[in-house]
Image (tube, rainbow, N blue to C red; front, side, top):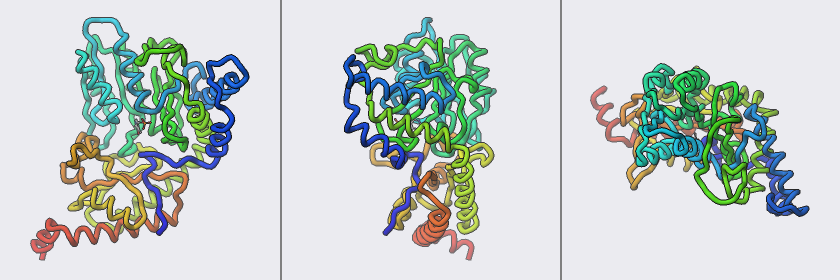
Length: 392
Ligand SMILES: *Cc1c(COP(=O)(O)O)cnc(C)c1O
């Protein structure tokens, strides 16, 4: 049975051109970039070339890019690195209820360290209202952290407006751009971000490499201590192959993002229309207008999302609920709950995230599989049996 991948927001396969760069790099570029000999300098050159490629994707200067192990570390470095090194008795962070666990977890850690944290809610659209950020600010707000695009719904946040509000209030702005970089055009400086997170494995590079854009003049402290790598912001011998791969992936995105975004948006819309036409009591979660081109999040009333993920997997399609599985119990997605969905509807929702390997034929097959699986699950569901009896 063929398997088709519709879970690109969780991670992406390594693309052919990244493989072409990565494999010889693993074999040949093994020097430590801190070494002064030939091998070290060859690695250093590759590292700096990757830095220029990642910087170009973000409209940044190469010396504003710090390499890390991924999105989670970049988020932690940005949030902990700014707030811990800020002066003042009282410190405050404003973030949102729909952030990735990497941001929410770093903020929760700061709370344990005595920092005040405000989590701003969102409405049905899944988009943060800039005025709500304004109202959340305090005279001692150190940092505002808002994601550029949400990983579960694709909702694109009004980062530019939020940047102005954060800066007017005397705070710094961190943006988790993991789901935006490579999907929509990004100019970190023009957006007004002081810190901007990206992750290689969401961009068709392998896991284990990420970057943090740090705007010139942003007072970022380190959260790990050791050597003087990455301008003393991130000690440790760099993951050279991972970073080189991420650079290649970023370069591909810089050249192909516009065309790929158009292609993916058309496929996503085809999928969405197909599902909504075929499946009764289904609907899109969040606003359709302001989204990344590859993502749709759809609820199927009276269905357990997990059961649908498994049913689709058996038919050869990989999708996700986006919800975290904690202590064996399936929790409804914190993002969908923040958007005001009922617990039942949140648990009945599926995220479809498209990518480079998908085409119209796969989308059409997925629509058929969703329609058949939902019908089957609803026939089995006691809730539905009851309903049909009521309607009859
Ligand atoms: C995947 C993801 C992260 C974490 O990135 P890793 O590289 O997996 O640590 C952070 N934020 C968002 C929005 C993500 O989608």
